[in-house]
Length: 144
Image (cartoon, rainbow, N blue to C red; front, side, top):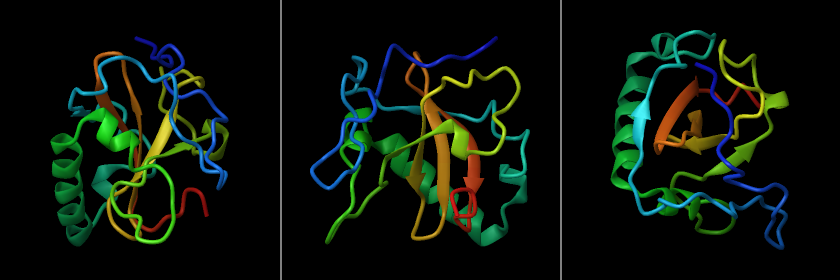
């Protein structure tokens, strides 16, 4: 099965006055809580099996945070600034990423979330409200 982007879930380049991309024209169902899908996460250099025990502890806490929030609450964490905390939702151009897993369209809308100060998780939203996890980056190397 080939995954493609949802009907324009985050039209780029909508930005705040600070130049931060923000979601707009997001699909209905933003009051729904995502569920995590790992289908595409084990076929690359940034896979879960490469994480060390302390990083796995961070990830478990992160997974709980994601599952406790609605998509709207996740989107609302976009941006930076003084006192900004949370998941730090940010859209990412696929050209900046390592090769996407086989069967995944280059048009998929990838975003990153903060698991902690250094750890980033890259994913995309699917039509069934799944948060499809792609890359686990404990040392912020992907976009370095």
